[in-house]
Image 1: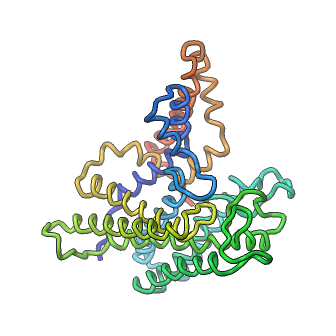
Image 2: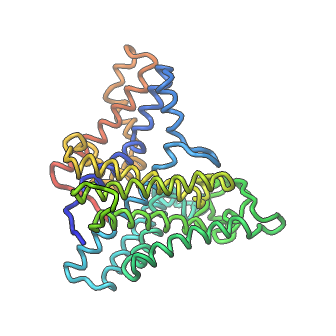
Image 3: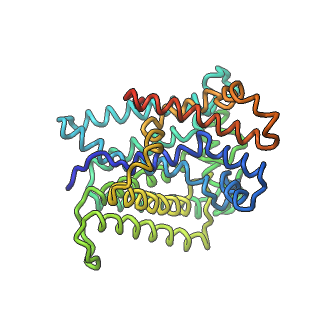
Length: 373
């Protein structure tokens, strides 16, 4: 099995993913409002979550993040093993990292810093989903063979489907999938009580089955890249071409499976249900196949530098954009342009805010400052 250098495509894809939540989404939305362009309006529609069932591009941001966390696990674990770390030491590191991520998530979206018990939620943030999926996936990856890993991942998806389909909420028939009336939300309220995230339709306890499955699919993507498997129907002698095709075919198969399942079991992000897991994992496979082929296989790396600048300080920028109002800072810099720009001023303001964030990240990159958990 290969031990390749750091995947530049993975850093670039991470940057692409983060771009939208650190200001890219606001840029597109404000441009759409100002220009009222048909094409931009279509893009702007994709920059918001679907309230319940269905799928927009913006719904891919969180699962793609989890998928890429999974992709990093084989590389980081192999590095630690090569340094002489035992499994117990690897688990202690994973546990420590997960606890920190969980607490950061509570700071980010669970109102921890408000110090008001009536506003506190236990879990309601991407970092907490990562913490859960990462910790369990590290154990699965280090303890079990690839075949059993695949079996467990499929089993988690199937188990969640069984629970959502055949276990009823007391007083209601099985299979009900309404925002405030489904077995996953019922368990959520049962476990967290007053600390549940209230009217929000998201669930986290049973959805953890989906979180783990999503992280595991990222592990499988890295496993394909690290192994020297060849496809008999490909004539190319370049092993990287075979890897790219395998990533792409896996993505197509998962998306096709999701589209078929969607006929009976709709895509529902707030539940992270099996159809959503299959669809987003498939799309993530397709994206990493594209980035891997362009950047790592063909060697076109310079264009992706700006994305890598974002992707290599992912936790820092994720937290910073929530705790700091960069658009308010930008307002202090570009407010004079408002009189000249009219309806385009919000667009200019969002571009300025994103530019300030990127400037900070670029400075950190040049100084070699990478904040990790």
